Length: 133
Image 1 (tube, one colour):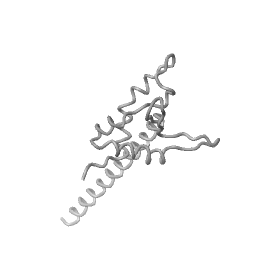
Image 2 (cartoon, one colour; image 1 turned 135 degrees about the horizontal axis):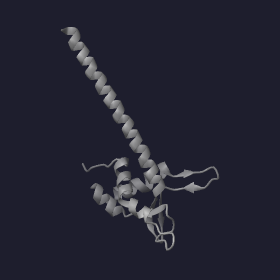
Image 3 (tube, rainbow, N blue to C red; image 1 turned 90 degrees about the vertical axis):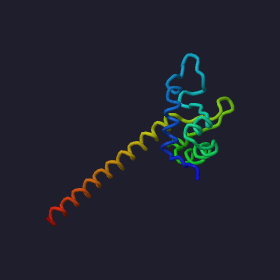
Image 4 (tube, rainbow, N blue to C red; image 1 turned 180 degrees about the vertical axis):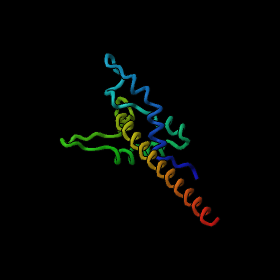
């Protein structure tokens, strides 16, 4: 069975690969329509993660777009991912960064819970050993 990348792996690859592109937006002579929209190359992301292009495209276009796009109080829709005839496929980089930050925060919490649980188990085992002796 081929590797199934996590949302975190995909999001982190997109962020790390295109962060410099996001930062280099030129206001004088812009190279894209909007700073927040960063064109991505699905094939490069897929190759870096080690999966087929369809896996990344499907996840970004169908899953991430549905999960992370939103409608504000005025009814305006902010999409995670779009296809544009001038720029091709692009992501809302602010949403990528925000989502990745939340994912990292959740991972840190989970890691902390594991450390606390492991410590509690170790202390319990130590207490049982002391009680038996």
